[in-house]
Length: 492
Ligand code: NAP
Image (tube, rainbow, N blue to C red; front, side, top):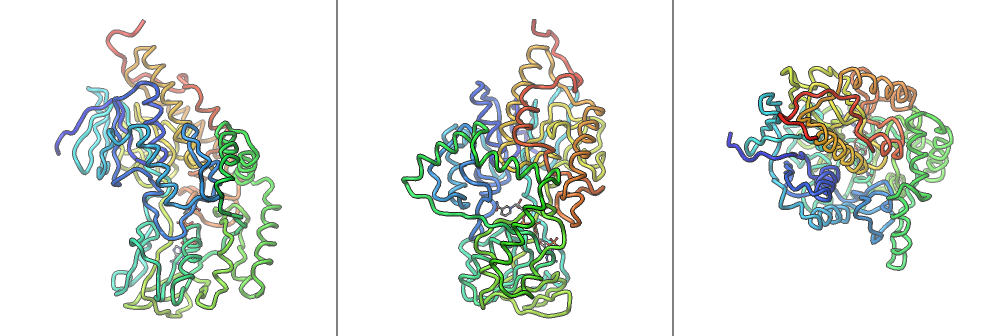
């Protein structure tokens, strides 16, 4: 495979959490970095997910980058095209396109001990990098269940994240498998265009009202002020979200939310039979809460039918429910979710030659969600980072960028070329995270969800608030690391 380049830092991923370290590098005067991405542009999840109705569920005044705060959102919760434009503008404004190699997927990475760098193999050639930063996304790798007959379906069939350009379902019979955040948003939009929509719901989830509304020009100044306060970790909406997150990770205060969701369901759905089908049997917070103003309304339209069962079979033009009922479909949408964090750690080899995934054996862990034992100069950012997820999906990129710059300073000051986190520090941090998260509804709420690892622990959530993450990653914690290589002449 051709050799492409040697760089100080190789960032893998071009979503919000790949953009932030690049911007922080630029601002620190570091220009020797590259960004590789399997996509053809910046934007990450907002580049990949283009289904109609795709919309953020964190208020836009909060869901933005602290170094690129804007109040010019067209709605309280922005839609995908606007978010994509925002991220691509941030990348352009910070001159990141010059550093980007698109259409380039990482296929493997090994630490080269003799040269103190990572050898990163990609679909376009080999890179060498002193630091490897993986920002490959939380919800990037589609789950497409092998439902028997799937390959024999003669109509159109696709995953929610591989939406055909311009498809609206117009005049068709569409079956949607899955009722998570994606399925719910998709059904609400398809209902407006399709002849018939059949929704396969295996497990109902708690839904809260979203209260989205359009913002007019005269609102922008107010939203700008609120956004600036949020970026500084202040502001009312910020505090509300911090509280909601800590409720969900610790299991406190959830009864109140469950009551609100029950009241919302009762207010929206008059038919007791339908209401019963839509009432979850697990605790609030076990599955990710859905926020919608129009989902329940869409479900009650004459062209929508809910099948409260798993989809278990597919024929040439039909889809079969667990009860055996067969439903005609022109198109099947798999809104069946993602492998949380993906499998990128199965492609990274530790110094001992084993992959990280093999060693971690179904219980993924990383010190402070960032550093992995056996992997010098490797940093995980957001998505692939065990316990790196927090309510503000793009915050980890900024917090980890600060940590990285602090690590670079420590290394320069101490003549260190390579360091890796201590196994005991990593295990201790994960033990403490599990102790907090094991009591939360994601683990103990009586459902299955994509955050649970193979041992039943929460592999996804950061065990604290945004403020806690900011604090934990504000300084480089040298005592948790050991030096793997020093420069010949340490700086004085
Ligand atoms: P998801 O929450 O994992 O939902 C997958 C759905 O597919 C579940 O309802 C699951 O049922 C169902 N399913 C799988 N196989 C099935 C089968 N054979 N028959 C019937 N149902 C089946 O995935 P998602 O909706 O893509 O959401 C993933 C995450 O993406 C969200 O939690 C959120 O973090 C993010 N997201 C966010 C937004 C937003 O508003 N910002 C929008 C979309 C996605 P079970 O529950 O029974 O497993």
